[in-house]
Amino acid sequence: MSGDVKGVQARVVSEALAGRLPLRSHERIYNSYSSFTWTCCAFSAATWAFLIGGYLPYVGDTRLGILGYLAGLLIGMAAVTLASAVPSYKYGVDTIDAAKSSFGTYGVLLPLFGLLATLIGWTYVVVALTARGAANVVQTIEQSTDRPVEGMVIVLALAAIFLVWLIASRGPWLFERLSNYIAPGHMIVTLIMLGILLYQFGPAVFAINVPVDQALVKTKAQGFALAVEFGVSNSLTWWPVMGGLTRLVGKRRHIMGPSVVGVGVLGAAVISMVAALAAVSAGTPDPTIWMIKLGGPIFGTAIMSFVLLANVATMIIMIYLSGVSIQQIRPLTRLRWDLLLALILLPGIYVAFRTEWVIASVMSWLSINGVMFVGITGITLVDYFLLRKERLEPEHLFSRDSRNIYWFWGGVNWVAIVISLGSIALYLWMYDPVAASMNAYAGYLGAGIPTMLLAAVVYYVVMRAIVIPSGIGGYSAARQPAPEIVPAL
Image (cartoon, rainbow, N blue to C red; front, side, top):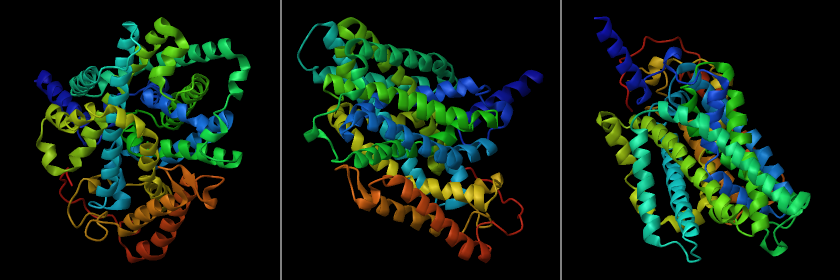
């Protein structure tokens, strides 16, 4: 009998990890500060960190680009961790389930769309980077100066997609273990590349800039603001990620430090700094080219091979989180876990045939992707900390009943929806991510920070003045008995 009970308990834990059931503290897989830090670092340190770093010199001054990017990351990751990671950690729920308290049972479809676009979109970006990078490695080994054969790139992309599906279908335990090796390896590789740069160029490497006619802006102030914007945009794309990860963390003190340091500093800023220096000295932002050019055909190829293999862990985490969140759509809850992941990865077949276009569009995608969450971050932060005083009712997060306290108006908090959409419009008015051009209002802090702050203030004022006095949303009304729990939208 005891064996049967243990078997049932193991099955429940497995279903919770691969689904949306709240995780209790003893069911979580991250029980130390270092293990979660390394996962955050490994996740953030994918090839995109090298690619983004390669574009930082184009703000006109490489050093300002690095410093501005770091500043944007620190500010953005602090806000995102508070808005997304803390509620999900406390209640053991997915980011989207936690966001129902501010967006409503059905209004949460807006952040759900952004989450799926982010996680699945960046998975495809990493697939493209991995496939083209692996093809460059093969060409280097064969000592060929020709461009990689496109057929080889397609096969490698399809192989990467299959490998991600194979591992992710087994759950989150494996990427927790892999990260303990991959993240330190990334740091070692990054320090080695920095050492090579200093050996070849000396301290003067920090003073190398792109030609003036290639800079995206004309003044240093604008360059710094643009770099801050890159950092904030990158951070905002972590809103849909951090909650899904922190629901797997056992202790609250392991939330803020690993999130900001692991993601923002080690995984993003440090790697992007070295990438910026390498790219500007090599004359190309493409890491699959400058790594081999910098390290030589043998050592550079070895470094590139490690970075590409490490991408697999990043893709696994993103697809795992996508699989959990997409179960908000009720028909998909009936699919087996492995079939659900296969469905998510299916559009990647198209990406396998368009890898060059995907890579060329990555910086525009970064900024457009970040703008999706500029208002959402401000809203969820204010709602949880200032309006709800860090208290949610988990049973109501899983109800589709109109008695649900997060029902608002027909299941939608239209205040959150309107402010989120308005924030996108305001951001795009201040900053065009495709042309990388800013108006005068974004000339010093970028567009992300002012827009996020304004969204938070407007949401707070409207909710305090109109919504809370009306008794809608469960802010001041007496707690109701929980209606029947239906774990789907």
